[in-house]
Length: 267
Figure 1 (cartoon, rainbow, N blue to C red):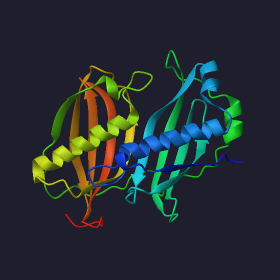
Figure 2 (tube, rainbow, N blue to C red):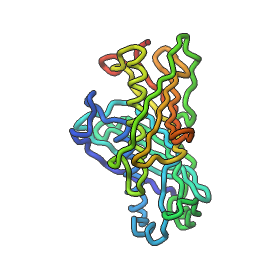
Figure 3 (cartoon, helix red, strand yellow):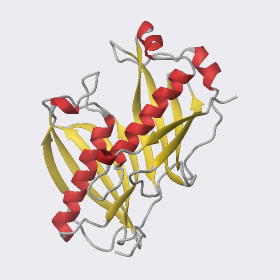
Figure 4 (cartoon, one colour):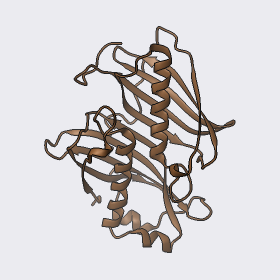
């Protein structure tokens, strides 16, 4: 039987953003924490991986944030494996408002098993497959993001630079995955402000992120933002983070224009 695990979190006031809502970067952190708690619940804690000199890293992440999450909401996040192969797994996430049971977010992560020192792919122990037993079910309604027609107007490609700071690195000395989400959303905000001078009502609904290479403290990175499609209320953007000519992160963002009550509105 598939190992289903549900973690419970109470939203803390200092976690909300300027809109009074839980940001996508924190939601991603909660998804990753849920995965850690799930493996520990099954008996595979930090010590288990330390003894085998192995780590898990996220190579791809889809995060779909469908309802606002506000203080003092409580979340119940359920996770399971949908498939597994020699060195990787897909882990699903379904987040509900614990009071109303309404689905507020979904996620799907492509986790890769690596040797902790060499960072080369490492075969997943058979006992993990036996314990977690992937079930083939995805938390996402659509695994691939929706496509939209090319916009009927032109938006210049936006570019910005930033330096990587030490506080943005995790225990393996690489920029934490959730940090990239903040970078990407800030760059999108700046791109919209540069063209329309008003990004207050642009709400990121979905990230489809691929982590290709890691940034480390001291790096200078460039972020490029390009509008690739638009519907009546939605827009689709391609974002890339590069270190020189080297691609580090690619993101496909689906964003919605919303009104004061959070309902989608026309451009």
